[in-house]
Image 1 (spheres, helix red, strand yellow):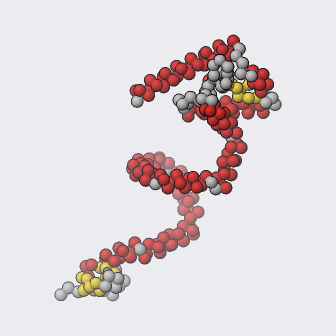
Image 2: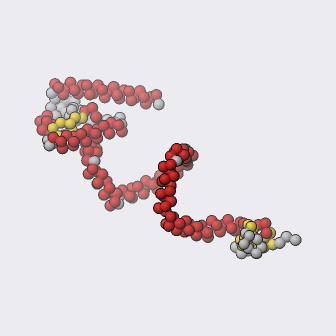
Image 3: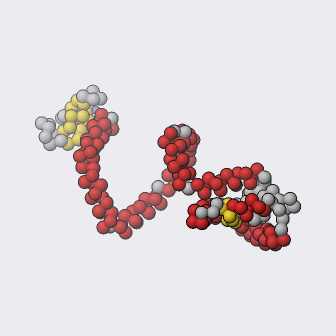
Length: 244
Ligand SMILES: [Zn+2]
């Protein structure tokens, strides 16, 4: 005769085999059937488990963090490989996840950028790195004059920011205000210069103002050299694009 037992969750009579072994119980089997145990673990007990885990981390969190830090330091190679493996294994999944949630992420980024905290961080950053803002503003005005070429790269912009940084350094060190000058003026009478690294130069402010966008033989010579180098670079870039 098969002994049957009633599961109080699904209210079904099932054979003992349908229940997990549990020594401390009288009949040696768990109260709920296997199917229900699985369901209950996922729902009822999950919250309980999470709570236990949370309490444990609260109590031992610092200790664990210290241990992990030390263990990582002592097994650097092992963790390096582990991290690299994880990165490779989850690469596609992470990419897919990012793609799937891009609207939500962009929206939350936009929302965050409107908060006082984000604005404060941005303001502090701009204050500490004024040359970035200066270059951005000039590039914007140059683009209005159609003097910002579309082929400017990230590296070009970084180079230009460095020039604006240099301007601040010179102004501070010499005590004489310096400007970043377009060697060939953006609004020149005969030819118009471009907002590119090769066309930027740090000069004392008075020099810059005296020039008034007028053409001198010295400038003309410089301009030809700059435009040539830009043209060569542009040709190289187009060439490399075709190869791709
Ligand atoms: Zn059941």
